[in-house]
Picture 1 (tube, rainbow, N blue to C red):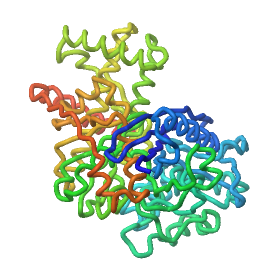
Picture 2: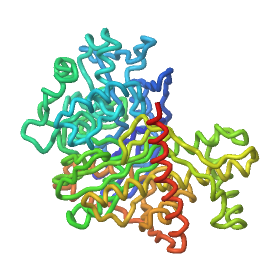
Picture 3: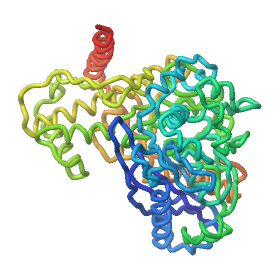
Picture 4: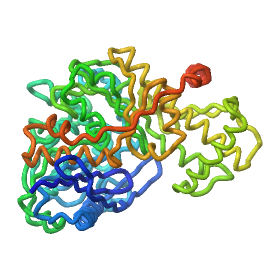
Length: 526
C-alpha cells in the first residue's frame, strides 16, 4: 500500500487525486457541488451532497489511476472553512431561513454574520490578537452567534458542529478529532497554549453553551496526525479498503500552502522569504516563520496550522476570480464567464496592449473590494470602487475594464505584501497555485505589479498535493509531515518581474492607495 488519496472540497466542486510516494499525481476526478443562495449574503450547501461528490470523484480517480483500491494507504482531506451543523443523532439540521434540512452548511463566503463579527471585535478579547485584531464574518464564531439568535430550534437540536474538513474526517472514520488547522484558524483555538480554548470569550459573546452542542475536543489534532481508519460504510461508499488510514486535514488554502511551500519545510529561517498565493474564486496569501509576527489586518499568527512548529500569517482577498466573473456578467458586452470567455478577453487585451502599450486604459482604476477587504484592512464592510468609466459599451471596453480589474487584484496582493514586510517578513518570492495560474494576465501582473519573483508549481494540482502529503503522513510512510513535504514536493517554474514595468505600477499603486483614502473620506461623511 504505497499510494495516497488527496481530496479537495472547494466552493463549487470536490476533487480527488491519486498520488504515489514521490508526489506524482496519477489521476484525478471532479464532481460539482450544489450551492444555495438566499437574500442577505447567505450561501449554503448540503454536507450530504458534498460527501456524495467526494465519493463519486474518489471512485473515478482511483479507477482512472489503475491503482487497486486496497493499495490506497491513506487519505487527506481539505475543504473550505464552511460550518456544518448536525443534530445529536448525526442527522442534518437546517441553517437556512427556509427550514430545509438539506441546507445544513453555511458556506465560508456567507456574510450573514457581519453584525456578530463586529460584536466579537468590539469585545476586545485577547483571542483577537491571533486573528489580526478584527473578527471576520467568514470565521466560525460569528456564524454560530447568528445561528443561535436567528434559528434557535436548530441551535437547541445541534449536537455536532464541524468545520467542513473535520466533518469529512468524521464521515470517513467516525472520529470526533478536529484539526489544529481548522480550530486555530477559524474557531479561536490557541494551539500554542496548554489550554487552547478560551471559554470566557464564548461566554462573552453569548456562546457559553457552545461545548454542549459542538462535541468539540479539548485538544486539537496536529495536521497529518492519524485519526482513524475508514469505517465499513465509508469504505464501501468511497470504494476503498477499511484499512485505509485518515489524517487530520486542513482548510483548502492551507493544503495549497503545503503543496507549494513544502519544499522549505526543513529550512525554518529561509521559509519567511516565500509567500504562498492560493488564488481561485478568492485569494489567500500565507507566510510562515519560526516566530510569531502579530499585526492588525492579517489573520494569525496561527501556531502549527500548516507545518509543525511554525507560525502562519494569513491574508487574502475575498473576491478575485469571482470578481473577474462578475465584471464579465456585469458588462453589457459580457455574458457567461466560462473559460472560453476569459481566454477570449485575454487574447484581445494582448492585442490592445500591443497597440497602446502601457497607456491601455491608463485612467481606469479599480479598487477590488467588491466583497469587503479581508487584508490588510480587515474591513468586511469595504466596497469596490471604479474610476474612469465612459459611455463606451463595446467588447473592447469590457476588455479594458477586465484588464484594469486584474491590475487592481495584483495591487491588492502588493498591499498585503507591504503589510507583511513592514511587520517582520522579508518576502521576495510568490508561489502561485489555483485557477489563476491559467490566467496569463494575472500571472504576469503578480510578478510585475509586486516586483517579486513568481513561482508556478510544476504540480498541476498543488492543493491536492498538499492533501496527498497529509495522507502519506497519516499512512505512516514518513516519520512526520515535514518529511512527507520534502519527499513529495514537485518544484516550479520561475517568472522574474519586468523592471521596465515598475514605474507604471508604482504610479498605479499610488492611485490605488489614494482611492482607499478617498473611500474612507466618503464613508465618513454623514
